[in-house]
Length: 122
Image (tube, rainbow, N blue to C red; front, side, top):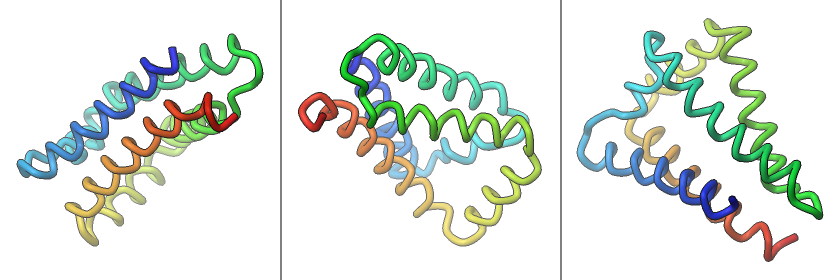
């Protein structure tokens, strides 16, 4: 299960990096207001997989639990305060959209590495 979650993070991160390299704009597509259902679906997939790892493995994998809490926080923020969420996104995209997309990809890859190595670290 850890390998599946780690692989999904890495694939998602490489998708952002590929999109940045080819100037496709996958991040802009995902964070458009009309695509909120796709974004929530992806977030829920990560929440479900992380919760399966957290609640079925002993000892508690606190690294995956922390990532799960971040995903839950993001979903609650997106559902409860969508205007605030999208205004923050618009503000960060107005500064430098390329850097944001590249940074998002690298952060997701780092999450994948942390999940993969969480068994060794714990």
